[in-house]
Amino acid sequence: MSDHNSQYDQLLDEAQRDWMYNALRFGAAMLVILICAHYVGLFDAERLSEGVPSLFSLVGEMMPPNFNEVANWWKPLLDTLAMSIAGTALAVAFSLPLAFLAAQNTSPHPLVYQMARGLLNTLRSIPELILGIIFVAAVGFGALPGVLALGLHSIGMVGKFFAEAIEHADPAPIEAARAAGASPLQVLLHGVLPQVLPQLADTSIYRWEYNFRASTVMGMVGAGGIGFELMGSLRIMQYQDVSAILLVILVMVTLVDAFSGYLRKRFK
Image 1: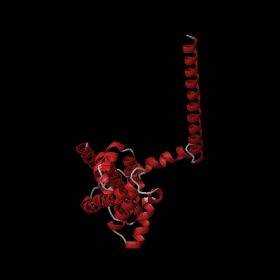
Image 2 (image 1 turned 135 degrees about the vertical axis):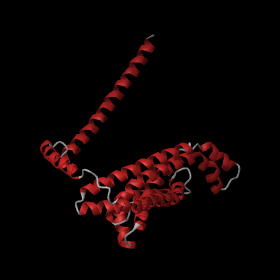
Image 3 (image 1 turned 90 degrees about the vertical axis):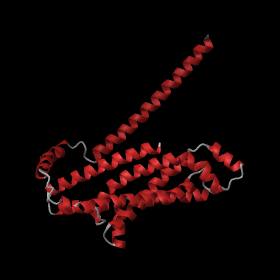
Image 4 (image 1 turned 90 degrees about the horizontal axis):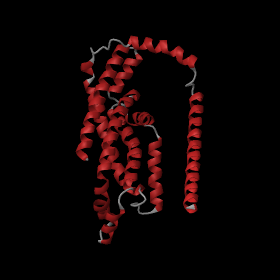
């Protein structure tokens, strides 16, 4: 009986220690958050209160939305949609081979693994807006620099998620394929890819959603699309046109999200 009591006391002590450690971690995280919030002025009530009237004034200038130029927005919207699809396809095409090199269970050598991971980290660390500016300077205005910027940045994100999905693949089919004398390429095609294909498809669809929203920002740096029209209206302070363009973008984002949801169901 005493042994049971001592075990119970030991378990209780461990639980209390775990609770204290978790409480300390939570408290430290909250302290960091509060310090950062104070540093950026999130608690500056005077400044925030002064900005509220300006915000309401701006919203008033945006009403009612002006849809007189809506006929001129269809082509930029089509450019934005095409930019997001092409950029995502470009990212997936390059991310898949990189992911196999950046996954520990499929990479041919630790050095190759580190190099592939480093490349994905590098591409992921450069914002697509900066890449858009660089490619506009390199290849000129239009949708092409937007596609290149979205695709290059997306390789870093999509490749990372692809690699993590590959690393979580069940090792049993992989070992069975190797034991049967399959080549390394056959192991990837028959032992790994069928397991992770649903996750890869899901990641690709989610990235397409993100790229459609990001492609509207690409237009603001001269990469074409509806963002270019939005920036033009902002520059000449046509706020009623701005609100109309934002509503059109909202409708398009909603449609893209609905269609991507349908695609995710099809791939399950």
